[in-house]
Length: 329
Image 1: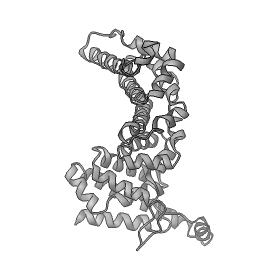
Image 2: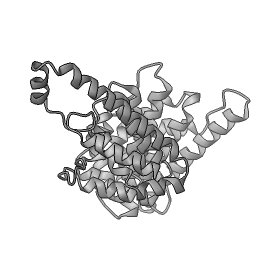
Image 3: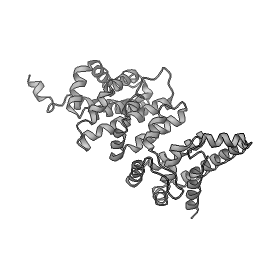
Image 4: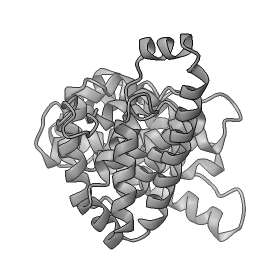
């Protein structure tokens, strides 16, 4: 009952005119300000923002198990969280909404992803019975990828990667024509980039890998071609070339190898990589002979995992069965 009350309060605050989770009317604000009520409006918005942040934080802490998350979904928790994600103008509320949705989707529960997919298809639905309209979470995540606030950008790309576990959400992302914005994040970072920047790149690579999975799982012949159209192949190989001597970037290198291997399950992509990117193949081959920089077990394991990922990629590229005709020639 207490959780249900929290959800009801959240929905009321989101739907309330002028609050941080709803559409804000500048004309109304100007009229209030001219009447001497501008300060009151700003105070009310600040109080609403703090209330929303507290409520979402409570829900996030409560949802510590899959069973509790399922119960919250039954009570309708996802709708107000999706509304907050799309309508919050306050950075604290936005961060709380992102953290809560990341937490809810972390286990990739099919029921939760299905509900978020259903809400996604209700993009721009008109409010009913005091409930706010739902805007697309995918679109909001993509828009936040270029956010100057590093925390928001990191949470947005993590949420996007977890949402793309659902095939229907991957299809919706294609309908939004959002691939260029996502692939635009696959840039070689400046020297001395933070671990947070590397983590964001890891999530972007995972997004690309999941989009490429549709070539096999959904038998979509254009799934990998769409990625290649925006130079995903070249961008990933540039990351491999940049990080291949960085001992601490083993997770990122494995993500690059796994994404390339997934893409190269498409024969045309594998052929393009062999013929158009010989320098990339050379770098991947060098990874096979990488020597651990230290004698610690963790260093050896990380290098070994990168070598295994590189070997798997090369196996896809030069499989005898796939290239039998070329070998005969």
